[in-house]
Amino acid sequence: MSWLDIGSLDDIPVLGARIVKTAVGCVAVFRTAEDEVFATSDRCPHKGGPLSEGIVHGKSVTCPLHNWVFSLETGEAQGADEGQISTFAIKVETGRLLLDGEALQARTAA
Image (tube, rainbow, N blue to C red; front, side, top):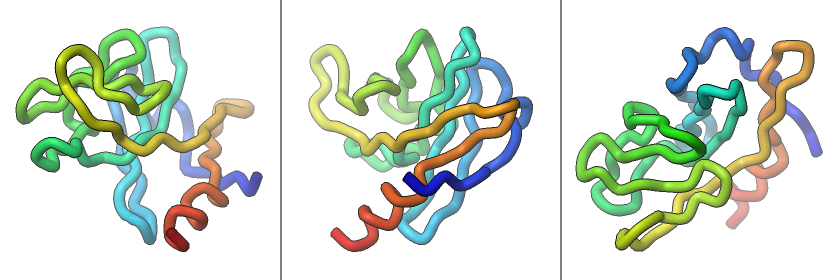
């Protein structure tokens, strides 16, 4: 994988998110209460709600528009909701957030 340094873990508040703008659209980077990080597409497939403005709880995010809930691990909608969001590999090394650049390039080619 080709890892892109997108900032510091401290740039993202606990139970919050930040946006990374890419050539294929915005990627939302979330931080859980346990300091785990996840990266997903920023748009809810239901009505396009900005997931980065949603509520992070456990390893899930709730869309701020219509309360759809998505797993940050798999991208799958939870409960009675249907749909899926894209997820991207991300890791933390020495306090820095590293996003999988190859996955973003592969998404462009599709």
